[in-house]
Image (cartoon, rainbow, N blue to C red):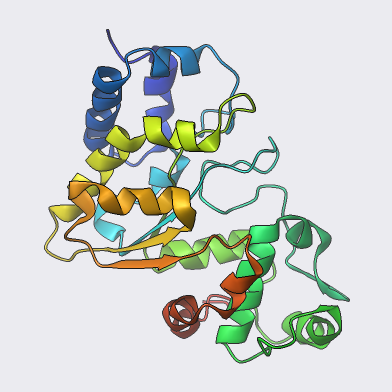
Length: 253
């Protein structure tokens, strides 16, 4: 049975360097669960707009890190096909702290707070509104990035492939089940990365993403694990602070 045409058409969003490997992964999915992709192609899922493989716009040779989350945001305006980038978020700051859309996206809010702690702008013992207000006010005039698009550009500039364990979200399918179906695809992705002499670092967020450390193709890749950012404890994660702090992602490049 061939890969459904709508799924293949979505590959146009991926850089050409990735497409043969992604087709290999899709073929592996068809062999493992022959009904999954045909059912998906006839179903409603997020992200919409042909953005299923949007994360792979970053060319394969440019990947230095693979950041793996759980799955797309469960809102059409938020799901972009890129891990952790909420399409409903524009400005990052407000007069009183983080913007309302950032605060609504719990994971993004905690990621922002972790970055502020890592850069020494905020104390991990006090990340509430009162402490954030002066930080946000300063950020609007001190050369900090102002939008989520700029944060995404900074991550891409550091070579982050922003990937989800499950590339789709459907209300009627449990995320764990969805992610399990994508494992053969992810194995092809990691096999392509593992072939490189300069191995990218795998950054796994949450229990669903951490299941990928069990597949053979990730065995040779450096790995960093953390709880998912929707947990408040993520803000204090020393490994994440150590990784992201020196990158100064909140500064304009």
